[in-house]
Image (cartoon, rainbow, N blue to C red; front, top):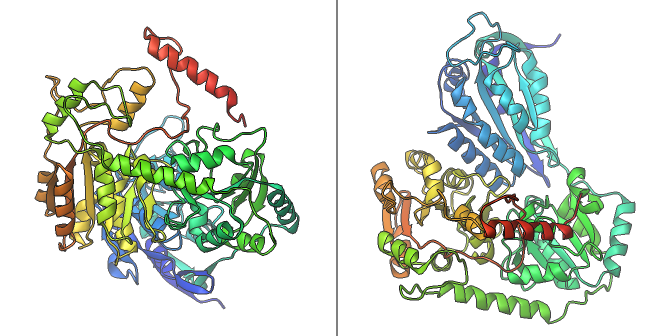
Length: 637
């Protein structure tokens, strides 16, 4: 006779989470680290009570904004290479709705996070309860149905016994590299507290094995044939390569056979930047070296990449008449892109199999790789030393701002600091194993091109969804995952205004993060987009009703929270602040005033964005015609 144990749905959930483990290459660890929460009606008396009574090993962390704490959970999982997660729970109604954006962020980046939104009553007897939506088409619809579009697996537990099958399915998704992403288990508030005689075997230790799957022999043979007949192959290193820890074998293949590599945002810091054949970021935000290699390539080897438009320059980066593709990916869907030869399998294991069978193969790349690298290093140094001149400053980096407007910004912000100088100075003065976290605006492009690190998994960019407001929360998640490394959130003033409340959580739990706030008084990235496509500067600058540039003291905000703050207007102040910040035990905020239009731009690549085909502006019409012409060379499917 089977043994049972009486527990509420919420208690059973907590007990189950404590017993989930993951095994990777023979190393076994607990899979669920803890639960981020903001308690309210719908979860405080059910799941909240269960966590209060017996959390087990789960760390219970109080968030300050539902989206923010969920972004911290995403960053934690990302930094842990998807091998450990946090769950997140919020109250019924707006609390749970606030997590939908974060779930989308996790989905776009293939990051496993367990969402536990509180729901209305399964019995429907008190309906409509506080903060419940009413739909004429269906009484079964609730706020949490919005999670269906942004979840890899979605379920609603309306009876306690449903929890068992739902959680088994949920953790299959969470621990499967091919389907990893957000899982949503909706918890009606009455069901959370209902008791059931759960089978004791449900709570036994369960180990989920991350097996390194290999492609079929046929695909391996075809890939070897394609490689051996190519002269100019290039590897694109994506996020899947990092999660697989394929860096060493990629480096070995590159060195042994002369195959250069370029990086996506998610793939950066899989291989050290100092490695001679690492040409850096590719695509719209790529280096000149990487984009020259891609332009010459006759074979692209995509390793764990989704081929987003920034990587492919909106499907115009490659010569499709002469270039073939091999895609190595655990996801068959991703492996099919660009009509490629599909190697469906783990990146590390697949490359190890290919490496031993390439025999005496060598590419035809010669000294040009060295020359391309040298050219880019010279350009990076130039970007470091550009100086602002109030009389004649016309940076090659960006355009479309008059000298008068540039002078106005310099006076209003009391700065002549360029963004590229500030970023390279920061890179030069932090410890090499420091983790840099970013997500949105012009800074990801500058980081992709300029940031250099030789420490594996120290570049943490959320660019699958490029969600403004991820940066500060993401820094907290990265710090929780890598307690012995310094963490720097790199963000603009626009992102800081969007969401920064988990800075308070970092202070509360004594998790030191460093917030590097680049203030150029506006949404500079989008301002560049509108002006570079023929438009004016419309509604993207932070100006008041009198058209004056707003002067916001962001340092004062962080100081009020309890941070150590620094006000920075030039390179010398930044250098001194970085030295002092390393001595601090509390989180810091650097209020760095930089000039707009001083970010990186160019180096090949093109971005397909919608442009008006009807306009009173001749420059907009010209940009639209140029787009139509460019589309003729784009891959169509």
